[in-house]
Image 1 (cartoon, rainbow, N blue to C red):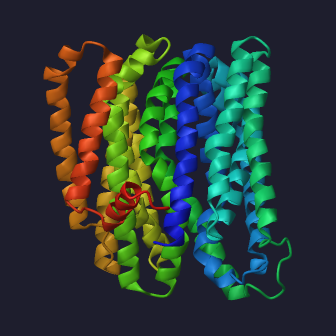
Image 2: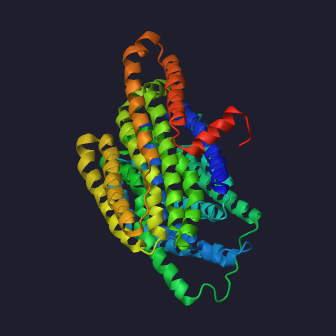
Image 3: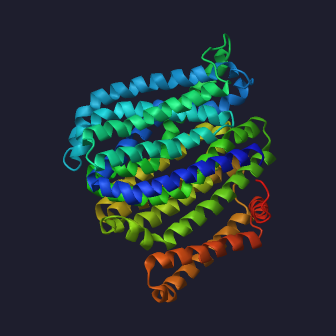
Length: 497
């Protein structure tokens, strides 16, 4: 896959370094330094800021990716960077006005079960602005096919800064108010670092080229941006869970959900790199009406996402007892096991099929996606409202899985019927066979081998090496992916990747 493969691998390395830092932070620092309610507050703040910033951007990210081929000139790219600054600024002003108008009802909604959320609600606009422009600058880098540094900033930089904030608060160096300011400020520093990197690339300009885009193209871009604003909830359905939980069940239970969902979120980490670097290439193929190339790209992306996400999910699931055993105060969070299972499966579905959403959004039929988004959002809200009361955090996770299943069933059927683009291949069927067999092997191991080993940590290490290795060997021997086989062969022969 050339540039896509190189940048994806580099981005994935940055992601997994960040995961390692996040693992240490979550399992050995966060749960020791913060209470469940304080963990829940940080989760709600970030999720709310991410959701609101996605709306405030007014579709800028998708518009930037879709129309960059028309702006691209290798120098200042005809002022598209300036547009990507101005449009979100306008959206943020609208969000700020709404925030001021509805602040009192929102505070009243969260005050009974989540008093900390109500107390620190005033920090949300600042955090929203930081998250918004961090994402905008990251997207500017992705269309230039330079995603590694922004991924390092997001996955490593923010986590290191957050880790420092946790330790400072946990050791009583700063107050909780000081911690919240430092926690939010880490996103502001990430925003500035991404901006500095873009400037260093030398392909951006604040100058808007006179007469370009013309009025017709501006109208088309404006309509597309407004449409993508309406569809932004598709990628943010999981964010609703913590917000619903905070209002209906309280911040403490949201904190338990946050720890469990952190494990599940690891499943879709590879798509953050592969998706970011693949979208501009898919957009170019759709623009050129090269259907065979679109099919080739989306099948590769979907297959490799399914492979990687299922392998990660498998390793997490077979070691779940060990994770909770290592976690300080793990007994308080062990009830989140069901969240890891259900939400992990939802992440597998979303990460392996999301490229289909991109195909629809880049096509002339993109407006039809609004119907699918309405179904997705409506299903998520209905399921959260219905399932949280009887099932608690398990209900919130189930709401996400059900919403995604309904959404992708409808969307991918439409993409195939109208565009003749399909994500599915025999490689995916083989992958599902492998994971079913390996899950059976894991159950057999737990029944017959684990009691013989005795120590849960030693058992986890041995089990991961043997069963995880067996899964990789099965994928390699069955030739599920030529790209994966080539990568493994290079590793075996110690060639430079």
